[in-house]
Length: 213
Ligand code: PRP
Image: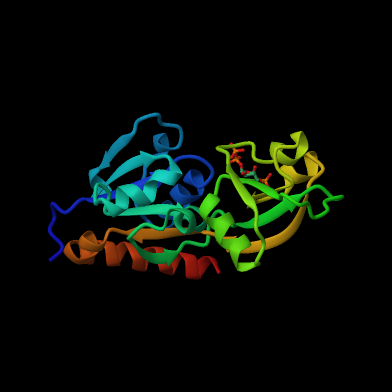
């Protein structure tokens, strides 16, 4: 039963996905006021939409959903691949398109002790293992493109969206590992207990995505 009191807790990723996610929700007819766009509030109740939004660092969205403090969440496929959490992946939202790539300097040559810097150590390790290449993976938390420029690593594994960061730093994409879009994920128990609300949101979003082509 879809009770009137049933509120969906939605973990929203702050940062690059956020505005596109809000836009998609609005296009799907979910009432989200304009002051959401620039708020610093971390928990926002939206009774009109029967939702409560939890503003999270993107990498934490799957954790909040796995533990059930959020029923559903929006997160990039990059984070899902790296975090490997026990959540349902319900829908490809088709927003925040980018890709995970191996990147290096144009004059890159194989080295005896290859080092790869990345924000995504699990993804990078799995990729090079599959390629049969032994590399040392160095975890960084941002500005990954610095690593080959300052001699910390000979290659990096990172996300490429417009390619501007690569161009401005004289780096090239050597290999694409996988394409990335944002996904709607759900907690396994919430998906059963709040199935009507979650499914109806899913249907609305899916229709909107289909209409947009
Ligand atoms: C991401 C990513 C690249 C850049 C790619 O970094 O790690 O550095 O965006 O985008 P582009 O292809 O459009 O240039 P982010 O902006 O999240 O910051 P970070 O360096 O702190 O990780």
